[in-house]
Amino acid sequence: MRADYTTNTKISVTESGGWASADADALLFFTTEGEDSGSLPDLPAELRAELDRLKRTGRFKGGAGEVTVLPAYGRLAAPYVIAAGLGAAPAGRDTLRLAAVQAAREAQRLGLGRLAVLLPEGAFPAEPPRGGTYAAPLAAQGAGEAGAAGGASVKSASASGDGVQAEPQGESGADARTAAGAEPAPQSASAADAQPAGATPSATTVFTVAEGLLLGAYRIATYAREAKPRQELAAAQLFVQRDALNGEALQAAVAAAEAYAVATNYARDLTNLPGNLLLPSDLAEEAEKLAGQFGIACEVLDEQAIVERGMGALAAVGLGSANPPRMITLSYDGDPSSGEVLGLVGKGVTFDTGGISIKPAGGMEEMISDMGGAAVLLGLLIVVGRLKPRINLRIVIPAAENMPSGTAMRPGDVITTLSGRTVEVLNTDAEGRLILADGVTYAIAKGATRLIDIATLTGAVLVSFADVATSAQTNDDAFLASVLQASIQAGEKVWQLPNFPEYREMLRSTVADIKNAAAHKWAGAIMGGSFIEAFIEDKPWIHLDTGGTAWLWGDRGVDPKGGTGAMVRTLAEYICGAGV
Image (tube, rainbow, N blue to C red; front, side, top):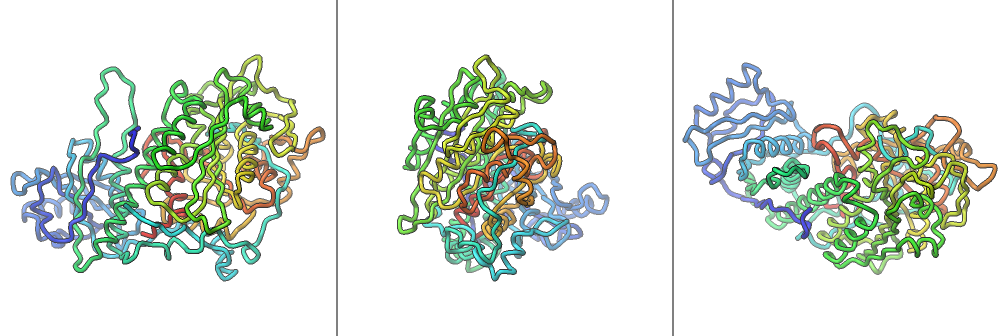
């Protein structure tokens, strides 16, 4: 990870011609299916003819995510030309981002570090997921957009965790609110309203391509003795074809894209760290380092302070490990005039064996990713530190290692949480919700008026969505509506699960206030969220379960093998509302 939380890739925007004569290792352009080479008059006729031949023979159709590389044979200053497919016209924003990602991957594979990029003309709208309808945005629209707000305006633009499917449900903290009765979100402007002054479709294109190139340039760290340093994309010069552009808006778009992508790649790196190299104390030190970089207040409670403060759930999860837990809190006050404070709580289990309820050995190595929620929030801190949104945040990360030992928490134990509620522990592998219970309580104590928790919480979410979508649960549909809209802008798939009171009833305990797992294996992902809801004290609340999306076993689309940084860009869009 880079100590200054930046990228070595230099991205610049050129508002004039000269793309074909650029001094670069490769010229990159985008093309749709069926588009002929006549749209590229700057290229030599031989190269245009070769591109048309590839399309006729089906070797390169211009499909979404397709990439081909053509040698220039001395006809250009650049030795290669890269064509990236956009699929059938008109293409959307996700397709353009994917094309940039795949082009960057191919360029790095061939050692082409400097790209001259001809940006396509036209608008590239956000693309809502196909195959269903988002309930929350519809509810918000039906209520006249009550409470549906996106990000704060930007001041400057310089198989996972709780592995069992029988995840806990929680006693209700609040009945589900309708959009009509929801309180307004802490921000007053939607993401669209908060875009940089003078933003245009070209700014959107600049943002999307720059973000895609930086995301595609990501390479997982290796610890092999003979490993070479990770190669980075050295430079990308973006050529914009339209006249009279707002240069300030384009530079703001580049700055926002860099912030989003650097934060995502950082979260990927953090998630990929082996468990022996990322202990709870290491996570706390990383948070302190980040906070120092951006001038953000940071508090770290050690194991003694955790016990003294009454954080019994976090303490209990950490009992079995030789590496004690930490409670990490980061406070950002970007809008001192507002009493609204968004609490963000991220699960930081640096390794999860399941404890006494131990997981199967097969695939347990993936449990280095069980701090994926914490990684997202620390990545988000980079965006906040660089873009300075007008919003107040309390970021709380309970960090622990869940290990079996003679001192470990046992099934059947009854523990007392920071809220004073008692929990009957039926499954020690349902530990993420336990530390999040203390986390949300502490966020409220620190002033949070609404809450979002994010965690690799359940393996059960894989049963519902595989590793394709993040699940969302809420007691406030209008609050969720704005986050879902941000996810559409970011191109990350999020889908709402129900939050019926019957689920919470299933978590009633006969010996404590609540139990951390149900006796059956039904609705496991919902049960995990419902348990957390028992501790949110009637605050507007969203639960995001990245148990399927925080880690992949192979590259897919925008996301690489290993840690994905899923939800960094969605939360960045919601909080910062770059609006491009």
